[in-house]
Image 1 (cartoon, helix red, strand yellow):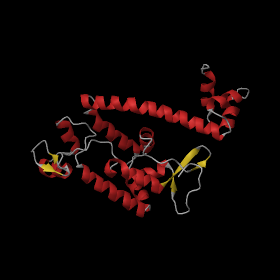
Image 2: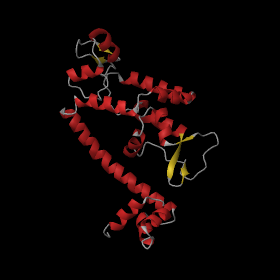
Image 3: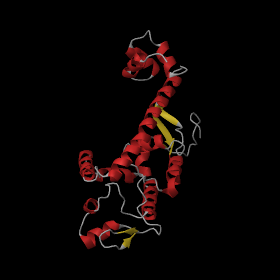
Image 4: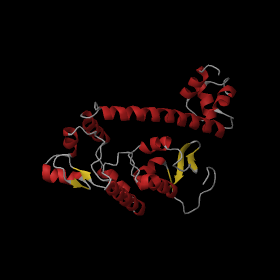
Length: 249
């Protein structure tokens, strides 16, 4: 479906933030993934406020979410050997999921295991097909019972506590060469994508306001105060000021 077309009455329209728990993404992460994988995701079909609060067809998002890597949306390494099992580095035994084995047999947490063997904090301890099955089951359950989202949110720890735990988990592996190399490569991919997404969004807002481009909008509102020009275009006053300070190409 192309932007501007009227979606079928049976379609459920959701914002990106509303879609994140349905697809299994952390809050705010789906936007980054969409920017990095532009060819994979459908285009928005409507918006609640002009140029903002874009809406997507939920069925199309679910289909795109399942279509990547056989349905697994996570960008973590697969974590399993070719036969689908994960080897315990303590005893050499092999499992589909190491978490229960580590706790029951070796009496260590996943974080302690990763630290002992110098594994990145993001290293998965579960076989790819097992993660896929859990992810699919979770998506199906939430799709059938949307009220589960609120129950999950109510059970979540405060954001400050989650942030503290995340920082603590990463601190032991941040200096590992493999982690630093991965983050450096990720930054090289993500920053240009984010910058391009911002430029595209501004161009779309300018066209929606009746201008040929953002540059055209700035030029045609140059006689207005920054705040008035911002309201005319549909952007923030600081954006107008930055564009006015740019040197002509």
